[in-house]
Length: 552
Image (tube, rainbow, N blue to C red; front, side, top):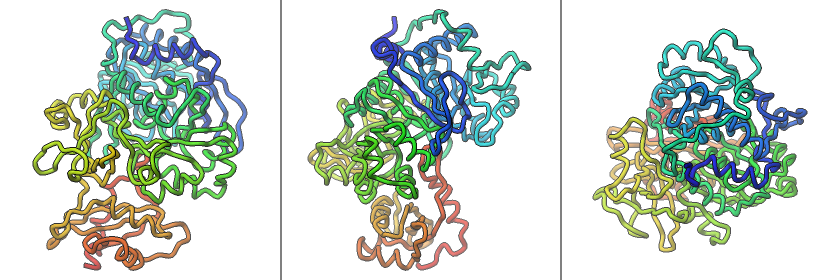
């Protein structure tokens, strides 16, 4: 018997209640277009043909795909990787895997050969559902090379139109839907809410990506509580301007399925297309990382009045630090909530609410979700402490927290306290009202001349300068002081600003030891696929700068 806190029965229940309600509306340049659903005319500025699947269609196609995969021998506990951009087939594959009791392994379609090989081998994936071509990469050719090197990988399912007659391990997605239609799906025997739903890999900004095991109940409960915090209803149309392979997008997708909301997808985010999509699809809820909102507001066609007229009311900004200045700018046209979480926490730990006072909505990441315990850990003694005692490492305990790192028992053990709290690596403090304020990453803390400096504090101050579009503060090794404070800055387009200008600005807003010793300018920051700055890459770039000690 399948437990109620598993994904497939939740989707089936929604499909039975409202079979004709749209579950997913998607546009894109067509990497996955033409498969698995309705297609329509191309829309100017919208990025490609419009495709829509109802709850009933997603449920039926997921059942057919699961039945076809079962006939190939894919069973409960097997790993099914999905290498697709944002598209309806992604959601169908997720539900099909859940119906089989298999584990979904989302991978980024931006990975290179070696990155993809590492994740698929580490995950021990039995099957991959992949786009044929994306961003100039021929995945059919790539997998021809990969298949002999991955002994656990038995089948490749391709989304596209190419005829694949030359390998009996390769199947077309549409063919499997046809073969599985009307056939029964074997019921998983041991599946319950504590079973693995997905294996998501961390972005790898600080080293090799780790496979994070998330449970059915953990993801479902966290996604639903997050949706409730922003008052999400079946009447909403939520635009996930984030990739589904990252935990933010994954959680948004599961939340839409569980709460009966229509999910609007863009194959890959681009600001002009996104603005057109919001208007055309009457989007009411917008989810994105800070970079998403920066790019939207920078777009020449950005018109807050038109977005509000289309029905846009709220959303979530998360995934990386959100400054008070950015939160204020966004809320002038979209009453967003700020959320905090990690891949390992499934993701949401805390989120602001509409009823919160402005100072809490702008200066914190809100209060923990129901059922989530948050403490701070003293970085010296390791003791847990409560509100206002001191800045400490944020520790989280909830159903949403990961089951562990795949094939890494040592890493898993080190990630938890004896009381079962997951150590996030983030530094923060809880106030008397239970609101959480994040001050930085423990590993990113800069020690300059004996002073501890949290990069986020400096970043938030520098973002207030009118010529600064984005900023990332890193530590640079120094023989005398230990580390220097280096501000990496992306200036506002057309603005003229110097390092001396920003240092002078900093003197009026922060303590002397926090003033950047170095200021380096960039056209753009190197980013992960989920919208985070690659700090390690910035550090390497600065380390190669021969003038790195200038100004000290």
